[in-house]
Length: 199
Image 1 (cartoon, rainbow, N blue to C red):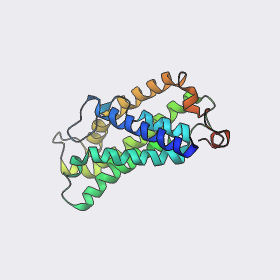
Image 2 (image 1 turned 180 degrees about the horizontal axis):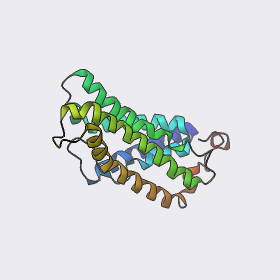
Image 3 (image 1 turned 60 degrees about the vertical axis):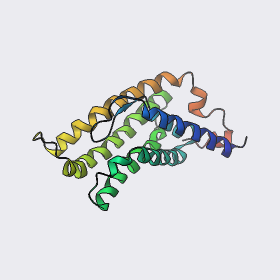
Image 4 (image 1 turned 90 degrees about the vertical axis):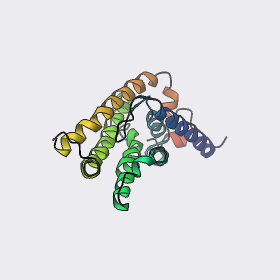
């Protein structure tokens, strides 16, 4: 099997796994979207580590499109096209595509496990920021929280309530899976000319 075909096949399988895992939720979905899943973003993180940041961004963008299709009802709350675009960009496009940068720390952190956990922490925080901004700029206007909280406090509490547990759970599982799947994480079974370009 050629390298390109192998990469496409593995990516399709991992994207499918990520999408199915996103349907298995510990809690939620919350009223305005968001839930704690069974490590649904871990396959995307693995793709970034295996094939590099560029392919990771492509895969993460494809995952964002799949998540948009699954969460299309959230876009229907938008009263106009500009708000709809804001929801699509902040809650889906950017929020999931940033996961493609998960392997960015491989060259600066020698311990691969620590690099993986750091990449998860940073990219999940970036995803949280996208949802946080969406909560302040869009969702507060559509669904006022009614608690008397400042929009920033409400968005921080709402989005943090599922993103923090998701980041912790994914980091722990990634750390534990590194040893048995080390060859896959590192791309050691890929052609040396390709593996040398990682991440």
